[in-house]
Length: 466
Ligand SMILES: [Zn+2]
Image 1 (cartoon, rainbow, N blue to C red):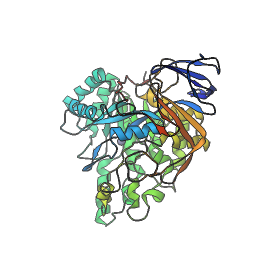
Image 2 (cartoon, rainbow, N blue to C red):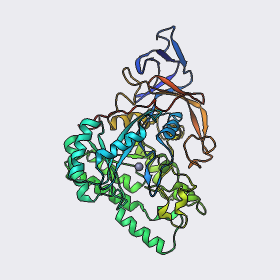
Image 3 (cartoon, protein in one colour):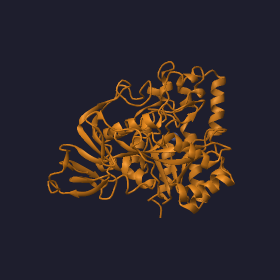
Image 4 (cartoon, rainbow, N blue to C red):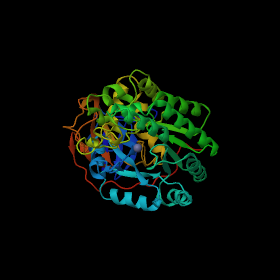
């Protein structure tokens, strides 16, 4: 049951170095100076490869019901695609809608995922109805269910939306039980006004999805969330899918004050734009309708986000994987952009897309591993079981070939989508071999994992809190 990963360069949060990695069963047993490990055991040759902790995607939505349809990846297809792309843990979201019992919604998500996942998985809990009962449920989830983060929405009135009073109450509760509040920070009521006005003017194309969600309304909500968290005795706050320079400024200012404020961004905001993708001719732009929206290439968003990743004002890169097919799903918004289901699918490509940032000189190797694996593990109470190559940690390991190349497209991807948001993109680097808890599940393009291998992981509290 032992194996040795030999000859590779292990990337740890402090940087790269040559080491051989001994795996015993499901966990990492030891790291050795090259050639000093045990002999006569099974070896995996990692010569010329980077050996990195398996990716952790802290923001996915498999099978999410949204706008009258459901995200097209199941826990089976989505976690298989994730695994092939070098991600060995996802944190998905159980969803409580207004009027539903929190624990019932969590049970429903367990039922969707159990036995279907190819890699380990955990849950955040979405709270769509803050009241006395759901506040009590927060304690129960933290104490008994291994769920230590709760997502609220300042957008989507009538669906997931919480008002400021509800947000404050949830933050106060989180401050007392040590959990993290995750925030979808966009001013939903103001956006709804702009959407209505645009449709009245006959502006129905996908690009108006972006134009009716200006960055000011992301920045305003981000700032409001930050100050509400301050009132809740500096409740830990994590801004999801941050897309815009002005929102990043708010996070930066809070962090400069020493506040418990964190943020993630996603590959789509680092590379894609309002004009080139969302503004594609005809209905094509629907492929890139997601919220927060893609931002203008004529402003400095992408450069600012890369810089934020480097300086740790952005701590994590997640995908917000929420795929919908064009046929029958995105098409629901033909003639009315507001009916296009919101979401992009990238769970398979995050590790590669961020490695391109290393090649482009925007991130160090260590920072690449931090933003895709180590920090999400620490942020959400999975560390040191996940997110690091160290004795005692789960043997979730990726051998990454820096000399390979990855071409992305619908013909070759494994996500259950009838298009790729990254069609034709070719990036440097390639996922070579993937191990999940010591088992090789993908090697040299051959997939050998199976649904049911992945287990639910109970999470502790965030490492970043004192
Ligand atoms: Zn999301």
